[in-house]
Image (tube, rainbow, N blue to C red):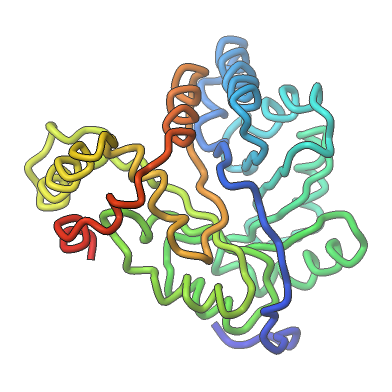
Length: 275
């Protein structure tokens, strides 16, 4: 990605800190109809009751935006952070349409990584005008995000995968974000390898089973360790958790409230398995 004309010097003094855990709206838009809406609103309510104060959505998530808005309009607006996404074309119109669907002001807007250069001037104007508070880039390609963080004044990035117990390939991106004062939000942590250890014999699942065995010696489940791991890098401020039911988000929220012994992270066998 070529450096756009608005690229600035390092912004290590910029501080934007989303809450530690958030609810991803990626599973709130389906199925359509009243039953789907009832389940989505109940899931958001359960997340809020569990202490989650960061909610992420997108126009691409079916009916997720209006459903999220229905649930959150009952809550004090100053108590939570709300983010959505744009694809690039006419970013200001996209943001304002999201605000209309949500019925709420939006704090943070993520642009899809490849589209950020086109969307950035419009998003920057919205930030300067106080319509939004922060701009981010979202991608599963950590190298793309690394180039963007190098060239553009961002508040945060949303990294899908690539930094977890099973995959730390995005560490160079996180190091750059730390140096630049850019917050990192990660998603895609509770992968099938973490949640369904017995259902596959692929190498990643075999390694996950070995990591799980180490964790169990410390009274820690693999999902609990997986949710706690990303924040061990100082650049990571937040982990997004996708859920489609109240029971699911309550269970995940219970995991994040359970402390992980510091001795686990120093275990020699674990260090070998996650390096």
